[in-house]
Image (cartoon, rainbow, N blue to C red):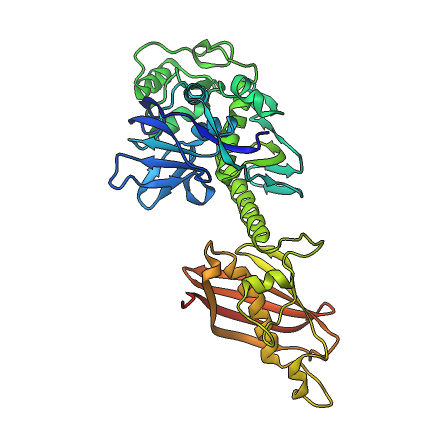
Amino acid sequence: MLEMQRTISKPISLSGYGLHTGTTSTMTFKPAPENTGIKFVRVDLGGNPEIPALADFVVDISRGTTLGIGEVRVHTVEHVLAAISGLQIDNLYVEMDGIEPPIGDGSAKPYVEKLLHAGFEEQKAPKDYLIIDETVTFHNEEEQVDIVALPLDGYRLTVMVDYQNPALGSQHSGLFDLDEFVEEFAPARTFSFLSEIEMLIDQDLIKGGNLENAVVIVDHQMGEEEIKRISKKLGINSDIEIGKNGFLNEKSLRFKNEPVRHKLLDMMGDLALIGAPIKAQILAARPGHKANVEFAKKIRKLYQQKKLVKQYQHVKKEGIVFDINAIQKILPHRYPFLLVDKIIHLELNKKVIGVKSVTINEPFFQGHFPGQPIMPGVLIVEAMAQVGGIMLLNSLEDGADKLVYFMQLKNVKFRKPVVPGDQLIMEADMLQQKGRVIVMKTKAFVDNKLVCEAEMMAGIVDKEN
């Protein structure tokens, strides 16, 4: 795999109509500086608004992946992103004067050919790989989708589909090296079942769809009247036939397993929304855009968390996310009011676990109480709040410039005294977030026994200079 970031050497364009909207547009790929990432730019709108190609900005996955910010949209981006990802391009502006990229022949091949013609330029910054070092799983019971990412010093993607249809059957395919992408996967075209066509038309989709940019799989018999009705809705004047090979108009496949190769292509495009190249082996059973994007969001959160950890924790320690040196870079508190020693678990915007070792040397034991030292309950609450604050500040890109002010405490309960020699294990779980106001549920344990709990409301404010 490449080690340095790269972009293209020169701008290059292609034009056509979109698959679902049927609108025409010109799409221009342009070089972008290091660490820009992939950005779609709507040059037909005032101010040329940009939409980063990140899972955070996915607004619709009904029949493709749509990105949006506010009222600005770019539909069906997965084939374009697959081409960019497959060619290992890190930084690129994708300018569009319309709402949807040209569909071309329904594959990623037209985009790949243009990008190859533009050529590549190696940049000075190294690639920021997300290295999967532990198994990550996704399961959707209702749709029977399973996706797993396994540690691997490379990039492999294996996909299996089973639509219980004689024309398609059970198929699988795997990309074991990105060098295979251009010849083996980029040409795989989008496909649809015949039974879906009329439904998609009635949903105001596939306005640009025809038998030149999609493979239609025959999954039921149709009478002459039904064929005529669908032909009229598709705007096809020529005759269409139910092919004997299981595909409309006897359409020949580019690969024996072209449908599953296209599913793999779609998944590559959706996984590009992680926002970083990854080193992993990914196995997927029956994936679709919804599952792909949910998995991409899960992996992206892992990427953001690893990036934050590396920002503060320079020395990796077994079983520790942040040691005391890292904590002092994150929290403004200092002696005698820094009440957390280490963070042992962190899930961005979800959960954090911290540890406080309580010793007789704590300054508050001199007066609380002489001869019977007990940690003040208010300081246990403060310690839980500091642990929660680490999760909150690290959920913001500019967390170093923020402070957490606690606004409300509810249902505070003290279950057991905390004394010298105890070790507090403190958990904070995110319950709700609205803008810069967050609600958390916090608990503290000693020897697995609950000693304190509270529901906290906090506000994130800017530091005063």
